[in-house]
Image (tube, rainbow over all chains, first blue to last red; front, side):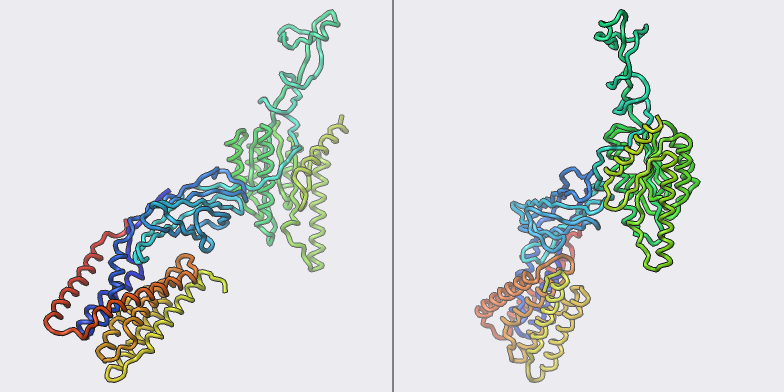
Length: 433
Length: 170
């Protein structure tokens, strides 16, 4: 926080009165009439009183509450403290676009972003509640604090800038049933691995072998037999999951809506998979192709959310860069979840290629009709329908290749979609066995 | 009418110009009439320029001119308007114009600005009325005038020097 204050200075009112006070004796002398002096006498006295002025203001703008991880729409409390030798102070907040004052306490509001604080013993405190309407990074606010001297003839101004940056995270959907990776890694987690090891899920009973730990002996089974039996268990492991965020849109689409939808879904998945202790990675095609390697933990999750929020709309990604990044980051046993509107052919091919290479792939297909206006012209409407059919055909091809695809149309919750995808995978595995 | 900052700025500016126009309508007869008329409308002109331009320079000149015009009316023999009314007009004009400047920078309710202007103008008028009643003076003459003039000039110059030498912003 930096504070820049000024000493009391005459304002426009003070200068006008000063001019009248200074000119009046000369006018009286020149014209031989006491009228000017008499008229200007009260204002001259006022100027002298006004110039005694308040001491320099010392505004302190502090921010309270959890401000570095705020979810959009949730309130952020700011505390404005002003110290000055005046009875009132006028605080004008310069809020960033997208932020607005929701409530205030200890002050009187003037206009949209102005507050008047009453100072008691030279100190005034107000609490302001701000709300941020959209995710993103906001430099919180700067405040201009103005105090006036007696008769408002002199003014002290201080500008207070808050260096705190509030990162407003997108509002996420709650996802109960996730599409879990089929293969697990070597780290302990919540998933039941196919490998044997120390876990909760029982695999089988087998006879004791040298080097089996005594704790694994099943004494109950051994008591009914003439040899020792051991309980074999599946290891509890976690999975590797790479989220591929594709915000490719069509020309003329509502960019804000398209990006907003993709970001919210991706953020929901990052949060949901992060809670399951999976190791997460991210590949984003938006503008610059970006990627984050596999890792877990709150800091990494936060880093991914920030990366997701930087998503921009593109009409055509740089496929060469995308291929290189996918080649570098995606490998077994990772599961890859694409969040994509599936509007480009390039993405279908890459998903099929990964699935063909034995990579566990899931696709959250965001319906682009949300942000593309349906044409009214019959010919264009026909073309739109054919394009929709092609997209549906691409989804069918992906499903037939073993890729779990969930079509996320407007109004459908992400939780329902992931449940459907998980159910589809289970049924497919049952059919195979 | 919703009191937005813009409307407050416009209304107070119009009020300041209106007060200037009222002051300009008080004109003396005789040889000083042209100066009275011209100075009256010059005051209005400076106020208009000031509130339209949004800078206080015009207002400063208008205030000084208004005070000088009181002297012109005094030597013309007609105290019109009276000293009290002149003071009221001066303070009302300055207050309304500066309220207009303030309303352009920060939210300011019009009723507050108007009430403050009228209250201060009335207070100034009352003060002038009391002083004028106490002095009951005639045009200054004699050797005392030079002393009074010297003291006044020194005081004004001293005030200006003090203002110029005050420390600037930190």
